[in-house]
Amino acid sequence: MSALSKQKIIIAGAGLGGLSAAACLIQDGHDVQIYEQAPQLGEIGAGIQLSANAMHVLNHIGIGEAVSAISVRPGAYVFRLFDTAEVIQTFSLADEHQALHKAPYNQAHRADFHDLLVARVRELSPGCIHLDKRATGFVENEDSVTLNFADGSSASGDLLIGADGVKSAIRDQICGPVQAVYTGDAAWRVTVPTKDLPPNFIEEVMSVWMGPGRHAVCYYIRGGEILNFVGAVEADDEPDESWTAKFPWEKFKSDFEGWNDKVQTIIDMVDRDACYRWSMFKRPRLDFWSTKRATILGDAAHATIPYLAQGAAMAIEDGAVLMRALQQRDDSVDALKLYEGNRIDRTARVVETSDANKKLFHLDSVEEIRAAFASRNEGDDRNEWLYSYNPLTVELI
Ligand code: FAD
Image 1 (cartoon, rainbow, N blue to C red):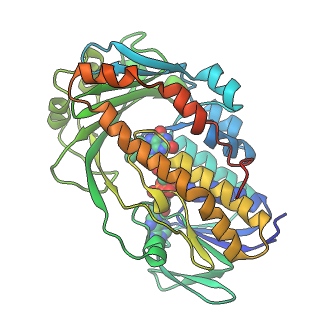
Image 2 (cartoon, rainbow, N blue to C red; image 1 turned 30 degrees about the vertical axis):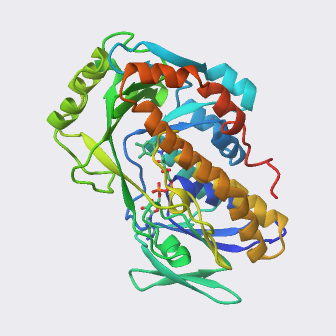
């Protein structure tokens, strides 16, 4: 039970971050109510990678084994050249990741993972997820915080968590509205049923193909039934911060002209009416995330380009650290300070490393790619600071 025992906590947003925070906090004895703008719960049909630093939290909330059961555990992380597929560097995942970090590296379908989170939260607290509730802003005083919704209703509690994603209304109110800036990158994302691919099409690894101005990622999900493909391109046309913007298949095909045969096979096999391309936006680093009774987590606080595959993992870590901060302080202001103080630098490092990976993965020539990888060891680096972090045990200072 927390030092700040049985707080009434309101969460705006039932995405991966809001739901995992909710499960942590309900398990810890708090009364949590979640308000989601969408009329229905769900996630898009793409993949998500969940490394040990996130899996510790999912184990803690009781869904670790279920997540592993719907996932693929890739054997390795493999960096390849865009045209020949020559392997430039590789590091082990699977057993080595488990042995080093005491939790698996999983690759799952986002909708499957979201479903597991929703089921767990509902099991812990039936009726705590409220749909069709778009948060517009909040009012706080010495004793409570009230979240207002677009339909004219409101909800009050002791604490408010804005887990309302990259366009967060809660962040705008806490930190001031800051214009999102287009990063210049957009991500094609498609899936292909494995049964439709040639036999033994590609190993069960996390593949990154690197080439001038773009890179592609592919890995299996849903126990190997589906191949997930993300094609990240530098693009200056029609930016739209939407997961559901469709673009012509012909554009997708031409973006990867001259790339390896396996990339061509995937692009040729996709549903031509389901080529989604998401333009990526960023906001500058924030120096604080909280007021006296309100804070933010996940993409609301630290949206990143996905070139380290850690955005959701950071959101999941945030919820666990927030839970522990409430355990360790008697006062909500101190607890929120402890929380953000332990999260801002780590999440900023993820954002910066993701930005640096854009340069690394998109180098202009094969010689430059070879030279850049000759002087680095991606596996050692990530094992040292990224995957080794356990949000449930790291000292909060
Ligand atoms: P969201 O998932 O955006 O959830 C926010 C929720 O709040 C939504 O349900 C939304 O409807 C709701 N909402 C918004 N506004 C309001 C409002 N005003 N009132 C009420 N509700 C509201 N991360 C990884 O860890 N691993 C990966 O492999 C990975 N791959 C990625 C690949 C791509 C191509 C992209 C684009 C991202 C990837 N990410 C990955 C990042 C990850 O998807 C995000 O960081 C993560 O989904 C953020 O979760 P969140 O809960 O903070 O926000």
